[in-house]
Figure 1 (cartoon, rainbow, N blue to C red):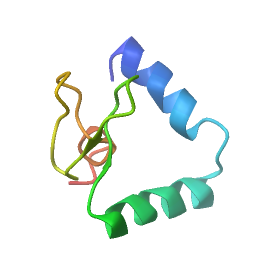
Figure 2: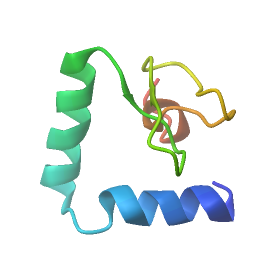
Figure 3: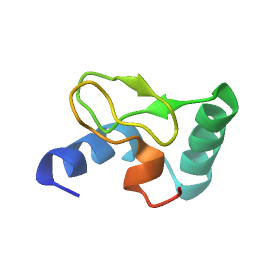
Figure 4: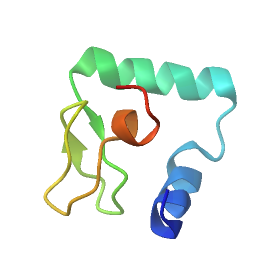
Length: 64
């Protein structure tokens, strides 16, 4: 992860324990997409990147 992506990770997941993080990722998956690791809060396909070139959290975390 780049430093900017690490900061986004702390913003999105920092206050969550492992179970809560997994629940959030499952909610996103069930919704058919997820946030990208982007400070703009872009919503993307699970295997996609946003218009700013940032990957989905699923990609960045090596889940797909």
